[in-house]
Image (cartoon, rainbow, N blue to C red; front, side, top):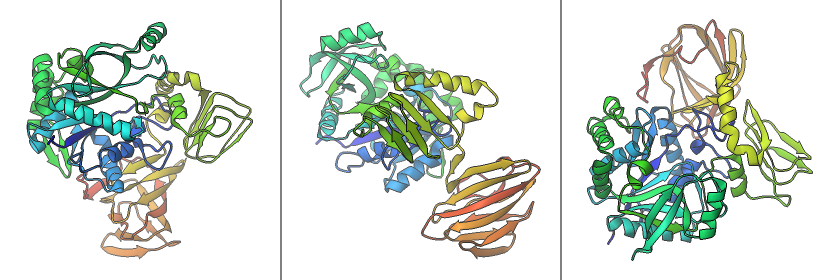
Length: 475
């Protein structure tokens, strides 16, 4: 019997191609676009069958660690490990580190399924048939990638040319082709034996590490040492920063897949998108009679073949065609759908200007291990926030040097500690926390706690927090 598969989910990316919803500190894998789950949660759901999969290993970074843990908790999905990369070193080092962790947890015969956390996939019977073909092929020592049946001559993807058929149903890889010009993409589509390179892989731990030692020894050494010297922090594995930084910055495709003689590809006809642009989001949506895909509070009049999404204000769109209109809480993007591959260039321009740089980095809503907050209004020497605390969670015991705070509960029940005093606040009740006073907020109830916080003082930055006790290891 073939061993169960160990899912390895890459969730550390900070892309901004889906700005203004996606930003450096709020990347697309953790955002709901269409439906009631984030892309990361959809990925977790695809690997949740205990008959086929072990509990996932997730690779991410320090900044996203609590988002990973919380979004997995929301689905009730246990994780076997959350591995924190101290510095971005591309996918070769990430895969090598994950292989070492998987070997320690599941043994040398473990088979890894490496997945991006931000792809949209229709996990139907065809998809799982492809997974099982890949599993059988990987069990034979091959390094397997999934080749997606192309639906158009896309120039934003790499391509894989099929070689000879293998007994498992996979094929040997004849060659990899870089992102082509349009005429070359059209020629490959016409030829019929080329597939999009999906960036998903399946391979055994031992064969992968062997190929890594042969073709990318510096990566293998750095990643292995980073895992050997890793530290445990709550539920997280922190890779050793000094060791991991020594790895070359190179992708698994360049480091291994394009060099190995053991590469195989599973031709895959399931629906797949890397959601790298707003037109890709439009393509996966459910259109109305006019070809529009809308999400959030919207009104569309005489508008066709457009994507209209809002996470804040109501959007009313009239008389447009082939347009993307995307609103976050603090910014709106409007552009032609066929130009949406160029959003990255726009984001670079915004990032280069002092007045707009923050719009590329953070959202008004920030998430924390206990819940999060939304900045509502900023003035001189005061600001207003909406704070939300997950049931059963508490903030750190803390104090501030430069500000005092007023809290008004609008939903749920708050347990408030001020100095030696502990009190319960319910809806429409409020409390004042003087400057310099030790305090703590907790949600002892069964529903989300929401409150309005008014801060006043000479300095209101998030770094004016002195944590005295913190259950998330931040004090």
